[in-house]
Amino acid sequence: MSTAVQWAEATLLGIVQGLTEFLPISSSAHLRIIGPLLPSGGDPGAAFTAITQIGTEAAVLLYFRHDIARMAKAWWRSLTQPRQHSDPDARMAWLIVIGTLPIALLGLLFKGAIESSLRNLYITAAMLIAFAAVLAVADRVGTKQRGLAQMGWGHGLLFGLAQAMALIPGVSRSGGTITAGLLMGYTREAAARYSFLLAIPAVLASGFYQLYRSLGHTTPIAAGPTALATLVAFVVGYGVIVLFLKFVSTRSYMPFVYYRIVLGTIVLAFLYSGLLKPL
Image 1 (tube, one colour):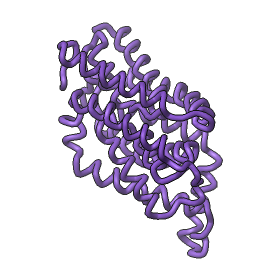
Image 2 (cartoon, rainbow, N blue to C red; image 1 turned 180 degrees about the vertical axis):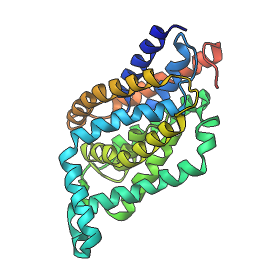
Image 3 (tube, rainbow, N blue to C red; image 1 turned 90 degrees about the vertical axis):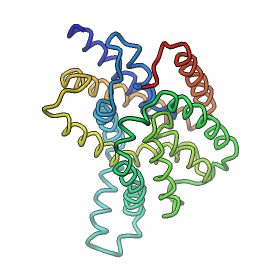
Image 4 (tube, one colour; image 1 turned 45 degrees about the vertical axis):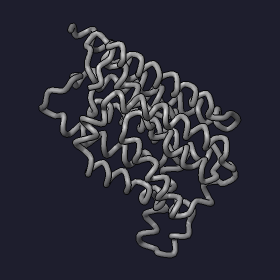
């Protein structure tokens, strides 16, 4: 495969990562599905997915930079001044720490399966369809009355458990946490904002770990194209954050439900026809 083709594929995958990371449709599923359909014909791999997510999380850091800086300062004060635990920003920072624990622990325990068997496209298609149904129910029955200021420690942990399910391609990090938020009565916008913030520690840790592991090793996509894909994902992802938060403030998640079902069905059809291979 020519160098030009690899750079073009990396650009396309970066666009896909940026477009899908923050929507409840699973960016890892899209990269897993699209990769084998490209001229190179291979799975980009869990490492490529994790590294390009650094780009989309950089977009989160930029967009929420004032909130993040405020929470970081309040969290640090809470370590040295116990009374500061009542500060709303410090409390939110601690909730993010607690919510990160499930995905960190499960990611380490099931690391081998995450990088191999769980990337089976039959599993991906099933998760796309199954969690579409769960999201539809959550969007319909959720009371949508709670704001982030009302979040307790128990809810923070439940958000974290929902995020951990995104270790399986097809579930969606934002989809899992948003669904959990809706079921617990949070507004669509509150659930989406917390989803973005909660993902920062886990995604950056995973991305930089995979980047470190890839140094000096052969990977499905070379370092240069991977860096380009990460940059493209950052630019596209920032735009998606802006538009998505405006969208969910007035619209339901049902368009994403329909999209997940259609995509999952198409993947199953491609698998049965032989156009895609499970692994």
